[in-house]
Length: 553
Image 1: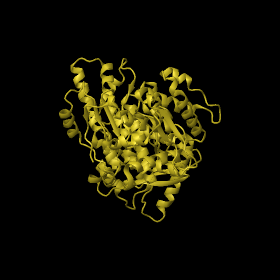
Image 2 (image 1 turned 90 degrees about the vertical axis):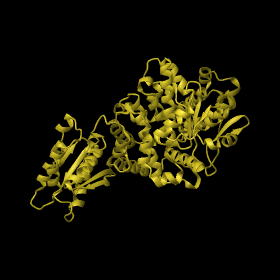
Image 3 (image 1 turned 60 degrees about the vertical axis):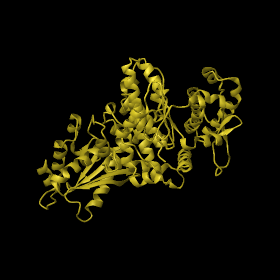
Image 4 (image 1 turned 120 degrees about the vertical axis):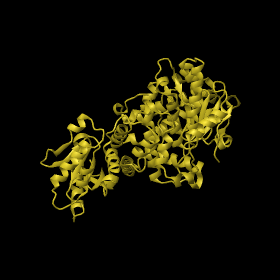
């Protein structure tokens, strides 16, 4: 392998372009890239496009253009233009996202296609065969995404999905282009605005309100939501992207509060966004997410969001060994005590609290359905950061584990991790309360009008009923034809046992949600309302907890 690399990196004049092409193909065949038999058979030299043009090397969804020496004159610019035509043609022919790779054996460049033009997203140059071979292997595998059954250790996640990886560079660049092309769509503007409003109110001047950060958060949340499906054994490569990022598969499975429509599902509103989600799912499906034994999502977050940004925002993630030790000391009676981590981050303390609950329950021969119900009624999390909340919800189900989640007798599951500022929840409860109603402002003063979503206090006494009510309202609003008659909520009231005294207020709120849908701004309000309500629910004396997790000030 090293002899092959030495030949590739030696840009001497005596070699031909055909020599480089043959050596790159041999590298792809012999390198430990975990290619399947089908992949190996489909490494095609001089692959025909159908219009007399030929691709130097084609592998999977990658088009590789080979030159003898990219340092020579206009060779690189001309090759990029040529490669753009190949990538665009293959993308149009197949409907899949194709990437372009340009190489002379020593220099490797990866490109993403947008509006008929290639944008460079990652590169690597080989100068020493022995030292640079591992870097080249990681770079190529990240672009091709060929390895399978990867153990999701901290090192593997950082190396293959982190900010320094070619795969992250490719995904981030693709998502940023999609956002910039569509950011003026009303629904995307609304979700971007709510994201800004939430993080500005909680983080103040430390919050860096940029499109780049919004896109970075979108990529993180989309990744976590896809991982959530893989945790319970769902083949994410076969699921429609809209169902993946809307959490419909979870709802069908009777698991609520893990994946839901939020600030970051704008991707699935776009045709090219859905293809991006498919590509991201294929990349994440390479990992064996059923074998996790720690909070791995914090590793992903820390490897993408830089140290300086996290320091400025006051984001500190607890090592697993310390969280495990704290839980062991603080939770003395796991089957009897209620535990809340009010600044749960990615869910490290929740993970170890759940593991302790399960091990204790198994020793006492508690049936699986009772174990799961006991966990979700005893261990709670809250955080003010929407990315952290999504991560913590996925960490929560990682801790429960695939065997329990897929148990035939497990019953309905509600994951109790909520979006809210626990340090100020009493103050927020006062701000959101008016005339015995929870009141959520739909618009701020910069908009043309202000509307309020109101929910009577009595509805908050049962958190699960409240969640189902709001979800039903959001579903009915979004499924209704814009401008059509607003349907009655009576069937929902009967199904959930909601008392007559609340009907008029809820019906009025539902009409406002239907109006928002007519303007292209709908389902996000279900997510927003449910999460704002939960801190108020936890202020009730009946819902007090026995063990309060550590809050880093």
